[in-house]
Length: 363
Image (cartoon, rainbow, N blue to C red; front, side, top):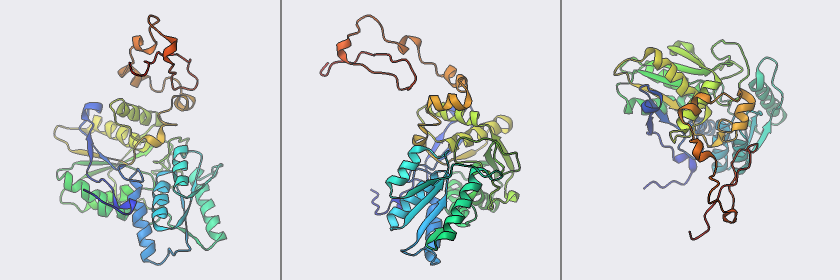
């Protein structure tokens, strides 16, 4: 039996999904979303807050402030509530509505930057906003996940050793690149390990992290409009870039097998599959880190209107073809339908309303 008194004390660190039967590549997915913050960001948030407390930076009068596209904001909101701090998260329109509501439910404030910086995009605009707030009031404490070494130390101390313990014959590790905290912590650890591990960074097309041109990115989490200060490419063996449409395909293929993961996870899985399709060999041991779960993406990645508006009506055709819904079940039979039973309508807001017979209670 596990008993805790603070939410950050619980974090499942040894759960993996074998996705070979879903993607036809040998890959284990390390699930990092089973904690009260719902993502891998709980580790970095805990490490950075505890370091700030040890250094005397955080006091009872402090107000935490941070720029986040979502997951770190939730983790800090949870820790702030647990430890009695106030917290202000600065985000942008790509942050999921459910994520914003969750932070507010935990007692935090959320400010949304609506206009991207011409050079740094939304991330640059968020950082400018945080800096202006800090300059306006000395009570604000900015942990700055983009430069804080606690961001990568959390994974040097916890995430990477857990993988090494569970997979002593590890050959290749796939890690998503956002702030690059997880990436750099794991890469540093495995650089000194007893056997060589090929570390592959997975990033989104449109991110400037590895020198590519900036373009539209709609799925929060991975990628950046500003090169991360924590990034040291000398620790990375290879980079794979993933189109957002491929992220969506991966998410929905997992969902059709009962695994609801977040957009960041879909990107990492898609990148890992692409690499393994080209470089896989018999007996290879490959692990990918899944940063988050999918509940917070129900209004975006898993919402038909959002998908079709941004990516076109055929974006998921290949997934639908692989998992068709029988036409005979898509409409009710005319025979035997009893309007008195009640009605059920489809969940798509713009779909035709199709009454379906429901059984009377007690039947």
